[in-house]
Amino acid sequence: MTTEHLLDDRPRVPLRAMANKVPEVTVYFWIIKVLTTGMGETASDLLAHVLGPVPAVALGGVAFAASLAVQFAVRRYIAWVYWTAVVMVSVFGTMAADILHVGLGVPYTLSTPFFLLALTGVFALWYAVERTLSIHSIRTRRREVFYWAAVLATFALGTAAGDLTATAGLGYLGSAVLFAAAICVPAIAHRAGALNAVAAFWTAYVITRPLGASLADWMAITPARSGLGLGLGPVTLAWTVAIVCFVGYLAVSRRDTAPAAG
Image (cartoon, rainbow, N blue to C red; front, side, top):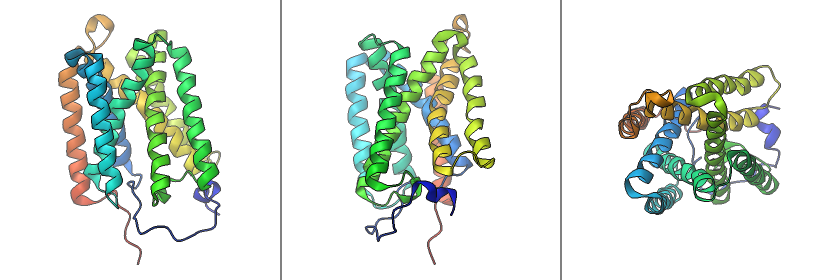
């Protein structure tokens, strides 16, 4: 039995005629995922500064809903559609975490475990209903709903966790180094046989959020705050261009698409 089946033990049944709705996990997947987290962090802050918190959240919510509506409407993985949804989840997930802290005054020491519990709840319900947390089985509408609920929760959790470490004395660069080291742990544990593939994937997925966000924040903030001082606008633009380039490459090369069954 493979590690993938450890969390996928329900007898196989024919699924609806819908191809898997998520990309294959390659090095490009992780690169783009980190880029979306950083871009979402700075874009959220930029929108709040330019438009104000309430209009920014409203705009982010509309864009988030629209991108997911398109993602749910297609019946197979399409690079542009999928990664646009991830970007919008990143922006809105950041706003959700910031609302608790900035808007409601909830400290990161409380919001971080709150989002961890929310994510745990999503995973528990997903597994109880589907008997799998595998991203290789997103071929039904219900599983797709669970998948995107988990993705949104990981972004909110990662945002709160990154801000917690940054404000606890590590700063953004220190946080980036911490999470860069942390993201190696599930990969090493999986290779050593101590962590199955599904658990390793979702652990790394959560960590990409504070890693990318900490890097982007460090690039954007002023030198007085131990940053590079590039500004929210330039950092958001640069990371967006990088995302477009990588997604464009995948859309053409289809390197992240599973080969059709023969």
